[in-house]
Image 1: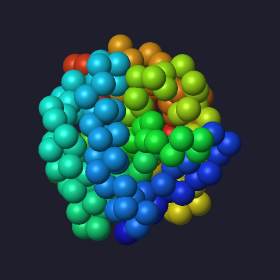
Image 2 (image 1 turned 90 degrees about the vertical axis):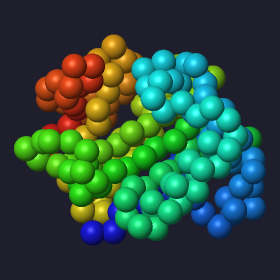
Image 3 (image 1 turned 90 degrees about the horizontal axis):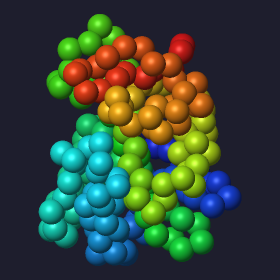
Image 4 (image 1 turned 135 degrees about the vertical axis):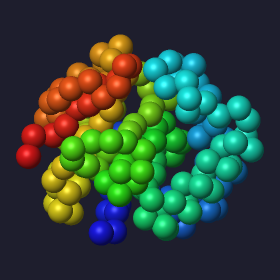
Length: 181
């Protein structure tokens, strides 16, 4: 199955995959990715995602583009409609890739999302996630899950508001949330 892309236009923010226009702003996009994945607030619960410099961000972006075209995962960008700047990243990971990394009874599509620290408290994911879920379901994806650091209560609440249910402990530090079928 081809990983579907998510294209959403909301009042203040848009969600989209890397597109032709993004090539024209590649350098700026890499800088914005670096800002997100080096931001202390963003990385508080996911320090392993830290990028150390702009070259890391370019490598991350190049890898995201290649992985998308190889069906490994689908990175989507959350951009501000007023500024055009990147404020967050959503990654959709298909079951086949999850099988390579985890031992589970059932393999859903996994969603990961990151927002720049300045976007905290703006209800961005609370407003976007229901539409993202609807988009994925309309593309035939019924099993969707997310793994969240157990101490990241805000992310857990965002997931619950969008219909995700806390299923169980995923590992010693994280919980597994899944959409009810």
